[in-house]
Length: 81
Image (tube, rainbow, N blue to C red; front, side, top):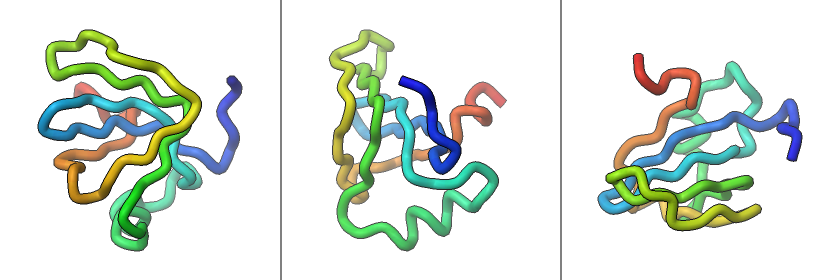
């Protein structure tokens, strides 16, 4: 699926999972503001969910991630810095 211009690809880490996917944030805007303004769940599209060892568990078009479970979130462009 092609990425829309109003989406940002992020990596989300929880205590058990690594999630990579797109959220409804225009690239260049502050991720902190997006998270602070979000309700209980963050919608992630084109999601890939792996365990912390890197084994892919599932890939799906849409998942909701509860904010309370997010330990780390970062734009994918910052991964490995």
